[in-house]
Length: 535
Image (cartoon, rainbow, N blue to C red; front, side):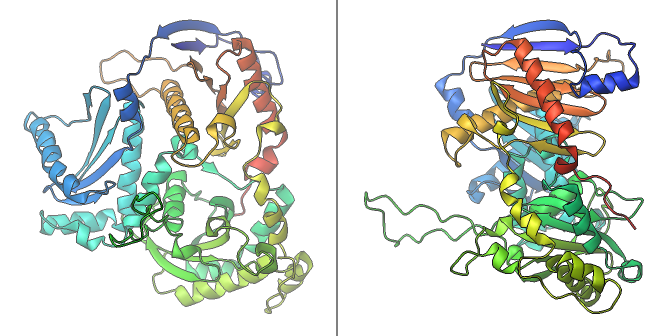
């Protein structure tokens, strides 16, 4: 049994300040006019089996040639391309553009971006607009590799061009994006997740990123970013340009893309019970190797879909602060500290490398040595404890914080978005949502994410079609299943999605939302990046 409650706050005459206090949970609760609906969900074993199947993604050209598929069986995927193209053509002949097809529990969603068609097949039960969001990301990932100007020029000359050959070697970038889309709440909320860190430490690190006005001008630097554990720590940016969340997600997906390991050979030694050996786990991206340097052309489509930027990427060797007793890395490569400099100049690698070396030296030096070095041309010596990076490394364990910090009865999970900063914070996956891939915990996470997707869709309805009556967006959405209850709330300053025990009273769920708002407000400077330096 699933109970859905749409709630809208009545008109209010309170002041802006009073409303802000109420939004953050410091004032009285808003009385909600609740409209209740009940829907019975009784999935069959076949429906449950379909829900466990991974989504399938396809990119094909308008000429019907496969460009990318998430399927392992590429031969079968190639056979499906003709069917997809035929469906698109039927609608095109009628002067219409197909958006999606429902086949029982399965949705097939289409995004037509000539010269490319993008398709996703899913039985997870999510709203259709979520699938279109996935296809939008996949299309923008395509533009990050081949710019819009290149695509248009190539297919203007040869409509049957085989784009896949040109993109050979970029498959890990797309596989990484597809994998991230399945679980990423920041992507769902079109926002950024930053590294949790005290403000003074973040400000010290930000100052170390600045190579100087002359260097920025000569190298035409656009952004300087510091990354840790796959999150943004801080950045240096132009005054008139904030990095778009979508561009940052594409950049991170490219940097952290894992490579598929070769499958075991048929002659490989079987397991003790006679089964074939399990597939090898994917390998970490070579870009994450400490001390390595890469110079990567990448298009950031939200910034400029028609041209490339060039990214200098290097992960720092933090020395003893990041190594175990035997000298090996104490953390997986994905948890390392990375430096990224983006320039519009293709031939400026040596200059960008020199600027990056100065930044690395300041990051690894003590604060006093860094301050002294700013007035001279010499680089500060590295500090034995990791220098400015030392407090950042100490905070590694606090990134996935526990619900115990909030101590809210019945609360199981939450994600909070600060709308003005376009950033999110969330607790770690705990309890029934914990566990590795292919576990009951993974199924529970997928179930909860799908509920969050329904909340998000209800809180952000699509604009009504021309001539159709407009639908007022709900301010609060509440869903309850046999597994959990979820609440979504949107205000002028934040969005909040939370999960609780299914039998928790509605008033207790509202109190949990208020407690989360108070917690975030009290730790705002630590959880979010504010006032990033600019030039």
